[in-house]
Length: 196
Length: 308
Image (tube, rainbow over all chains, first blue to last red; front, top):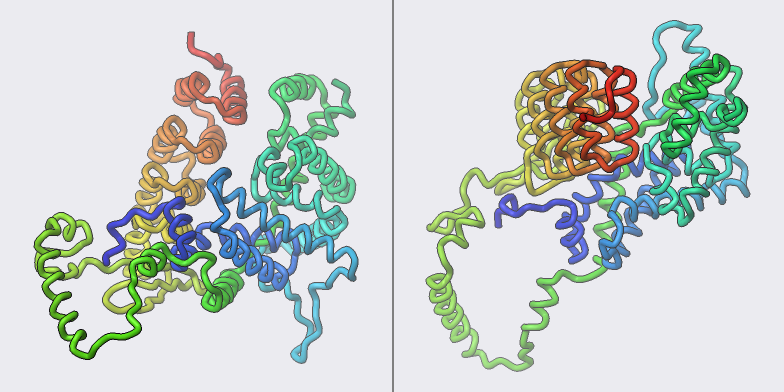
């Protein structure tokens, strides 16, 4: 049957996936998966962990999609799953040693973060050095934030979500999310003040 | 408002998370206080440095994640069986004993049933499903199923025809570009449109691509696609034709996320012709952030916030 004649927008895709249509589910995944991966990568700063969160999040969605009742937007529901998984991973990481991104391999030293794209500084060596130091300091500061502070900062600064939506996702109030963001930015400012 | 209080609140101000009154008080203070103005400038620089530290997943990592998920899904039973399977199960009669002669009789009965049912089905039903009266699928029934970048600036496209084949090539390749332009108009697959626009938006200098992005921004029913198209048009925020489209979108789009991005782009370039538009927005807009941005832009242009 020529499916092209049938309109399949997001709600239709969700309903089709709820009926067990795997192809519809994969189409749904592709609307959001770049953002999901970006959130996980920025929160966990590890491509392997981001990969695991991606898998776990979408498998949970797949298994629980039949419980989705359209009483909130799908992306709120999905991001709630993703942020909770990331929060759990960050909390677990607090009780074990923070992983270094640099690993020794048989072919020499390898930085696992090389598998991610970053904004490159221009050709000026001094600026490159400054930019490298700044990124390092930002990473260190982000790692020192509490999981909640880090999540709220990520969702507000990099994902551009409003605090009300972030509060909904984390099961807290807008005011609590605002306080988290406030604390996170204060810590970032204190740590990075001498760079600006 | 004291300086300490103002400077502590600057991040929330830059995120647009202060109430209208708080923001008003803060702006009044900053207008009169050099120290806080400097602090605001430093805060903006700090924000820009955060942007530089954002990580973007590589296309290889994304492709790897998708492949793993696809594999995992292949081994999973769907959470619920399909409606068709449930219906079929409900209407199936299981014969435990069937005489041998019954099989040809059943086959003939089904042939007759098919003949009479086909005569009862209106021809418009067949047309809707892309079939002509002879029951043949039209040759144009093929469609692009997936598009995805595969690293090194190449793109991979999967097309549904009578058989599936994979096309790959660079974005500069005319046939690849044409496929992506077709895919970004596929009404049946919002995910495909999002990704096609995402790939094409790296080439907005191409007139055809730019026109397609403008069209997607105005007409695509999915807000995700419209936001991607908007992203591709950012560098043309000063261009007259783009601004005209942005203005129409600002006044008509029903998604506040899209309108928020549009207002941010439009007010980057001050122009007197914007005054009327911004005043019109103030008259009908109910989103607090957009109203605040309009109000500020109008104030910067020394225009009144309302029409009298």
